[in-house]
Length: 506
Ligand SMILES: [Zn+2]
Image (cartoon, rainbow, N blue to C red):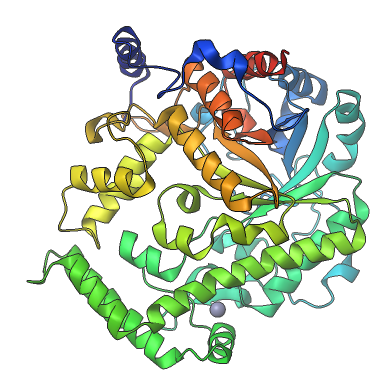
């Protein structure tokens, strides 16, 4: 767990020792020479409708201008949120931010039309006069003031979480089924009603709102990764997945048996009952005995690709110039090798106008330490020490470990601009001009405090500046400031504005 004071002192020490070259290897002094692939790069920001409504539209847009923002990525649904983020996770503003917790807030921010949901048993949260802001239509209200400032408006959709059955009528009927026949995590990507609901929502949005485009994405990985990294029970084995995979000549019985055996094995590893041959060797044994494990995993990711293609196709059929973007979550972009292998960037070109890889350089430090390496060490990588896992991670993903944080530094130091540059470069090369790349930069993303609660994990201005330059040096067409506007400190908005002004300078 980090402490702001300690972290600042640590960064200062690094700077004094000459170790900060713009975060990792990028000289800040040379930043003015960053070449641009496009004349007018997109400088977007991810933002909630609540930020505009709570802060006031004019005040909020004015603050965004300080960062040189020219594109707003505003949630059209907030079904992934439980609105329980502590107010300590918010950055300070001239007027104290209002907590989301304990308020009667809506999760559906567009006006829906029943004709788009005829082919699905799902519908949307109904308008409720008891909800705060129930009569506001953010995507209509935002257009004019945004245009006056030269800002484009995009909708941002994140997949709804599994516990949204309280809000989305019939949602429980489309949820995944695990190897034991129990309800699993999130909706099934192969469920026809779920797919029709997503398509209907996109059609509704494209038809009724005069916005530039949308960004869509889910933040879930596949059954194999959930099992090997985190020991979670594998999904999905519902009738739709079984039918789909049978058509691909994959035996559902063998796949289920393989996953059951591997799951039981990983449970033993968790309990410290270890095999003589080594944990990873045993895992590879299961994969060879039951190649259906791999096939089932691969097909799961293909279903997600098909959803992206359907979104693209239905939107383009209505408005050919409506831009479709793909949100690539942090595990796909940055550590989950199975996910990365199954869904390469090159596969995303035909279903996206732009791709936004999440490359949150600062918060990746503590995320890697606590979400990934600790969990890997408890499961399929049990034979390695955490320090060894980190070194292997650096080698596998092509980082110079001498420039990267050591294990004990990860809670207070991120992976810096070199990581942003490398992952942006990977995305640019993979897409090979097939879609634009908007690097998703994480700024002040909150982390847990030692005493409990959360607070923004502050992005040092020099590292942030170097990260922005790193993205453009790698060939990005723009940057998308993330995770949420409400978490980003005013100081960071200013830093972004200054960095972009320097890049624009001839
Ligand atoms: Zn399924």
